[in-house]
Image (tube, rainbow, N blue to C red):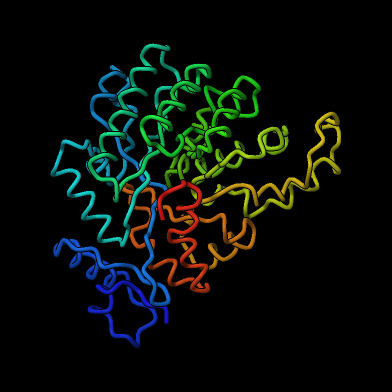
Length: 368
């Protein structure tokens, strides 16, 4: 019989299938104070829960940005919790307590690229610092953290070296990349050496968007549209270019994980199947894709950060149950109860185990 976490059992009677956010928050708060992490069980079996979408920063790398550092950290809730160097016991303890409160066993940390416009030496210094800090954190807390490396992607030859070092020597699981590099899309052949190295290493490329500066004026106004609309749109554009330009055909073994449910692609992918029929003038007849554009969705991993059970069910129907992993965007408080969201969705026990940790374990080549 499928159960929720033990700490919820002590707060909500077994006859209640759904509870209010207030009750959930109280239960999670009690667990955080108690400093314990009750195992998540599905069908009586222990499940390791893995959050593939969690962020952090390091003060030293921000200092290397000079005056631009003030533009790096987002103006959101959760920013103080971003800084978790391995030698800051209080910060790490607070992060672990927050993970415990959400029922998360392991976070896969990443840093959204903010150095793509910097010169080679500065970008290299930032990336070197990030990846070493990650390696230190993983060495100190191997059961609780994994990480995606940073890359100087504006210098592809350097990025290849950084990726190889990060994966083979520092134990990182791949790399976090933006959705483009200074206006250049990932389908540009200049990036092929990086994709080839990632494919060779079996490294995951975690695509995290950063909105589009050219639409800054239209995003102004109420609602933080640059993120609410802009971020999913940015991911969608990045993936569509990699599909239509044949990049995914050139690198069929590439492991791509797209944030925020993969953007809007999953909800309207079928439209892409008709575009070149309706307007062949806007398509390149020399690019012959190996399958329909929408079918490439089944080659891409996405996180489950789509907020409702109905949206999650539809996403699974589009990408496949084996392509969905847990993601929270922590410490930005988009999803404070990720495990409960999976339990609230009509899924089989096997499907819940897959999303909560099984898929991520396989994708990231983690020890079972």
